[in-house]
Length: 497
Image: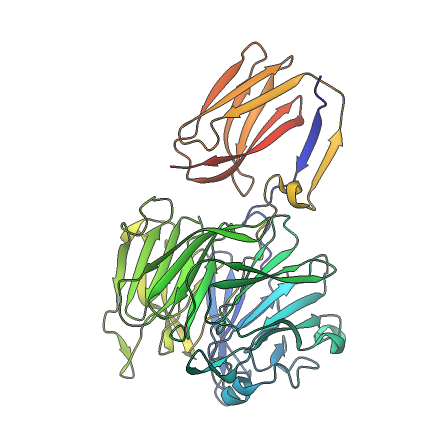
């Protein structure tokens, strides 16, 4: 006799509980109050700009965060931190000291993805701000300027009458002491939907560093050797996680792109691929479509699309666009860094700045149907940057109790005769459910967001049933069986092609 239990999982999708954390983008590079800066403000599917009187300029480092209602909390350019009143955040003096900080003063740190903001798990008021500066070094036969550590400060929004401030005892603390590549900091939520993985990379190596952020601690760094070696020529680039956290990409200035999968439960990368971008001049930006399927990569002059559902994604790359010779004040408006926005579009900053963003309007669509329109979003002031955000809306992975998910409980109930088995797993077309039961039951198949993508009745007088999964995209799913409203069985299913 098999003991039956009910597994109660709360599935949270990317758009189901949107937190509005990325609704306001701080932009522009003026350090003179006579020349205003600007913001992009997202509201639903619309976006508008407004001029703001802010003395802080942005170069390449740009991170900000809003509260869950979409109101601005604070932001940083890597040199200092500002509050919602466009003034300096309390205790932000001597923030991030170092050679590069002084070198780039007052225009903003010149390191792409040089700062990252993470809400402290289970806290309503506190946020971790991770960041790098850089120092001159001689290493591996080269003179370079690289970070020698990853730092963080804890920001408490209850300080300074709600304007926020840096907690003095947790300011400029080092969490990784090693020579790191320039910027490209990123983060993704743990499978439990609460904690965070923070990702960095060692310089001149193939080692990724990972930190685990929990309510009570910052654990790590944990290291993993995978992917390409980051060398002296990889002075710039961008990293990106897919919205569901299952895929990761890193663009390198040496015209290579690393693509791999990520296990949000263990924090491990796997199935790494490294390939050349068909361009000889400066590859920098990358991003994923909202449906997690398409990877976009760009050089200064070209934009490419890769279909990650295609087993031959490299050979089936699609050339989306080439620079159309557009200039502003005789300066080319090229392609640089990407960011997926709350309106579902992907915005590309210009390599030489200017008043324009390039826009992928339908990034979930294959090929030219993605509707890329260059220099189509006009800003009121010039910019040289675009903000970098992790996906704050990502929820718990189905069945995340296997790695201590906070949204999962197991509740013993009365004993019944249930025996279930699925095969094959992985599966490509037909999933066979073999079972013995004295009650009718319901089989449901959920994707990573908890959306039901398949269902079938399991009548007690049958011994097996077949579910067609050939139309589902490759990935990990949760098969769950319920009887009389109680979840009695669940198992992960891998769909592959």
